Image 1 (spheres, helix red, strand yellow):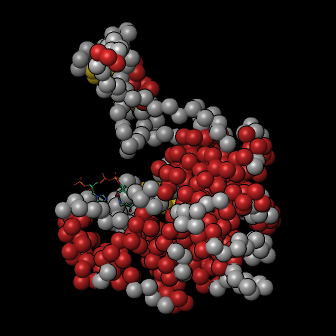
Image 2: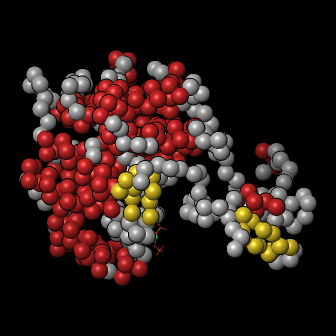
Image 3: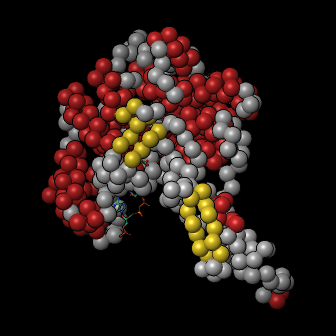
Length: 427
Ligand code: CMC
């Protein structure tokens, strides 16, 4: 059987053969379907890209119906159990797990770019004491573009990789400075003898002690959370990264744009909203009423639902287990009981069952972050740090893809027909 699609245009009765490749047709093949020679040709209308592949990618595989997530072929469950975030970041960028030698060199490259230029630090000092950490993160990552003018040399792979090291290395520094700025605490310089996660905790929490020692259980829990958040194929922020990057903008401003997309409560901002929602619900016995209000359409159940997953988000499953391990060290966060009850009721309710709404990655993560004493405001930044690795991997893949052209969607114009200008005194 030929891999083609036969289309009959009932307006003209003309028949067209469209090639099918990887389960898709090329949208531009529709353009041959015309009413007349000067007709623009048929387009497809897909306002939220819900059925449009914008690129080919070999990085992350996701089957939303089955609840499967793999980075470069490796199941997320195996990576969360046996790998580390830095190893996973390498895997995302280079396509293979590193050998011992490669991992040593990669770790060295990342850990020796953790410092921020003093002027970038001063830039951050300019933020108001109650500035939202995500606003600070977005602006400072964008501002890094002004420090690394070499980043514009996109044609050179070595230069591109240098920006990759810098971005993965500096995001924890920017995040921790955003946190310390909000408390009026002095910034802590990176300690490169610690692990990537250990150093981040050091920059967040070190006070007067001469050397900060992270709690190994919390360090590992954050490592797992970072692995789970590292990439998620063509989501809103990754699409922003590719979109901005397709104009050959440098990776810092592209990354700032991606982080801005992540900030929204329907995307990475949901983890912060979940915590606020659980606090608003207050106790288990108020859960049924809250669910009723959600079903009436008064609000959404934050941390529930996903554009692609129509099954339990595999990341949420792992995070739920991690929460219990963290609580053994930190003590139980009582919000977990409200979350579990919310999940139990929602998963039995026809409204959620019919719409295939399950807990997503953001449902349980905030409860862990709170138990680890991260303030609610910084939750989305904790998503942005590991996702930076995914954004860069996708950006590198895009730059090296021969099919890449500047992203430029079409529109269906619904405005006024041509009309003549009316002078002010006649309006
Ligand atoms: N609570 C209540 N109803 C919901 C929810 C929810 N969280 N999510 C979707 N629905 C309903 C929605 O009202 C609609 O119902 P109806 O068909 O009666 O109009 C139906 O389910 C389909 O919703 P949709 O808005 O068409 O779905 P979408 O694919 O456009 O949106 C989503 C996906 C993630 C934005 C949405 O599920 C949502 O708003 N969830 C809450 C926010 C959230 O947790 N976001 C994190 C997403 S995962 C991590 C990440 O990407 O950063």
